[in-house]
Length: 68
Image (cartoon, rainbow, N blue to C red; front, side):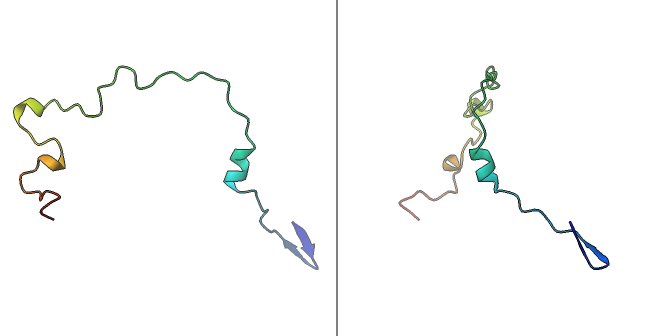
């Protein structure tokens, strides 16, 4: 902020980049809990036994890699 004759001029402050800021941070010494414990695996599909399509490769209308 500065005064220019009768005007008050407010200019933005140049801040360091996010990468520079993150590089200057110290590592955390905290132990974080395992938030994934007790969750089902990513590939789990309860409909798999019912014959439902579970991935794009199972879709009957999809061309195989050799056909495309």
